[in-house]
Image 1: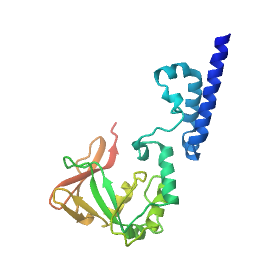
Image 2: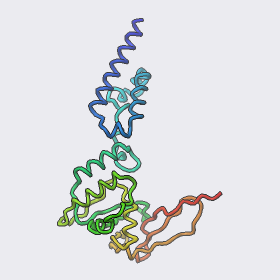
Image 3: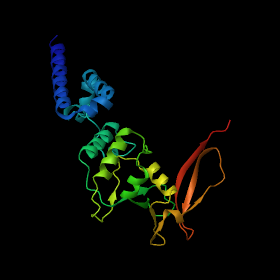
Image 4: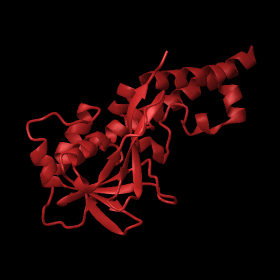
Length: 233
């Protein structure tokens, strides 16, 4: 009987501790986008605390069972939705310094040893091209953050501003390029070319993802972009 009361007391203490961690560290974004994970972690910790304290005590002692994963990838598109939305809200409310130009790093780079290709756009061109249009981004929060960033720019700042990881800029960048805006850097030429001078090729289509290839005027393949996914039966 004594063991039962000890078990119950420890369980109650852990519940209080996790409740304290939730109240201290979690915000509206956690509850909006991670509610199920929070409650699942809380309930499992109360049911399995003897095991958790043995195999990974930090889950309870540091509250990690209910807190958001602390890693850099949580700010990009594959990470925590709550953390992304929190960052987008911060950009919307208090945009970072932005100059007359912005840089977007396009992945799927085709040059050995190079992770991405730099695409440069004038913020004034973005504002004028999309004025009165819906921005081709994936959420209203991304659109609000991008509008806030560009509208609060300082055109006298000559240093280009890098697009925050929390904003998926890819669709917007390629629409700008399709309309003749922007510059693309070719590391092999050590030169930036106007987007209108890039060569775009369409390899033969096949089942699965198909990619369009972009090359500089000198014939150096720079990067791919997903074009269409074909499913054949």
